[in-house]
Length: 343
Image (tube, rainbow, N blue to C red; front, top):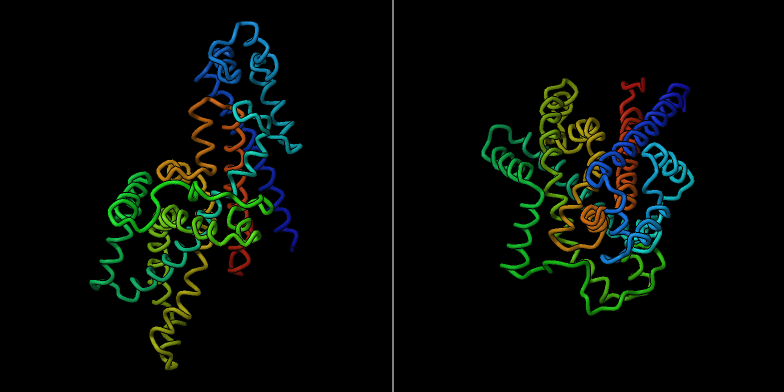
């Protein structure tokens, strides 16, 4: 790794820390605007709607709700740097423990969904480019425009209505059949736990329930990949080296999918990496529609109950995912394309 790359990574790490600090300040300010009275938050944290004033004051003092914003921000930032995301009073557990429970559940449908969207997007984009201005091109364009422009909640609701309710092919809600006992939590991820315990019935139920959320992620993400792939493919197919490949006797399909697609996919690395980070944010709506208890469920509950400790913890995790994805995308782009230099 050369000096310029190391310098670039250091600069981006500094920018990332500054971005996180600004985000934390913004969330603290926003929460205090929504609930300016510390006693209002204390009543939620007390878990007792009939708590006395002295009990509420005790909760305020315990969680520092009456401190100036800048002191709360400093204390929280110091804790974050030591890996302490705070203690969630509504769930009576540390936030890091809750993230360890809910985050793997979300990743189990986000990661396959993004992978599927990349595969579909690359090949539909290449196919559309190879059939430029033909009926097949317009069909692909119409399909990805329809899914891409559709709101997240609408697409998820349509999948649920048609596939789950009308045809009854897959479960409509939930993460697993509630009548099944969960295997021991050894590997954090429910599917890996089921494989570890050789509980195939539980694993099959998990897979059945994950298909619809995964499909929603894939359909929401593949449209832009298709559009970018088609655009870069058209540019690549106009180059001299592509024409030379055809002149050498290579079949058109092999030249398109073996040569042009490989070179055209390099500019897509940035978006493909970022798509994962953005899908984590979109999972909130998808999980709410399918009653899938992952990160989205936790975020929704935190926002609904003004659980600012939970809001901060999940926001920081998503922000870190976006920042790291940006850094990885920039580095990969520089590695895959030698003409690009990290400046």
